[in-house]
Image 1 (cartoon, rainbow, N blue to C red):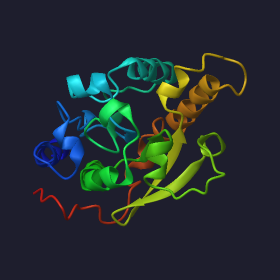
Image 2: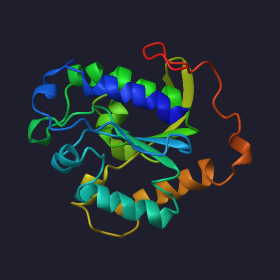
Image 3: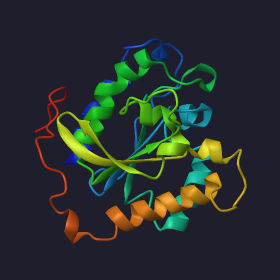
Length: 218
């Protein structure tokens, strides 16, 4: 049922001309994962060149590194996660998407969350974090990563954690204590232990009306 609902949203997204990114994309990069089984929605920044070619999020070098970290933490990309981005089209030259571009795509992102009703949300990188949380200029992702917070999507509260984006880890190879790669592994283990190990605990984890008013699905 969730997959069917998301297919309605994907088709609408495929025809979207809500911002200039539609003029330069090769493919929309809507989402990846088993919506009917996914327990966590994983939100990145924006598609890159490889993603634009394949239509699959996190399919380039950063995605390969992410897969390695997920496997090491015992998290299944295919079964545990539904992966998407704040925008569904690649920004030219892989620049950070603008607020206007993120706003144009927000109805699609919200619908993905509404229909999946995840146990928790992972915000991967600063762009994803800033899409849900207002930060002052002094607050960096290094200060806020690894901490559970509550975000609200269409009136429903979800636990969320911010983690480093794997593209950042491609530039940071150290495995020393408190190095970015070490902290990434720690954060993913925390997510695994808190929201993936105890199945019975989360039968009714999401409360509230998460029906999406933008996209009818019956």
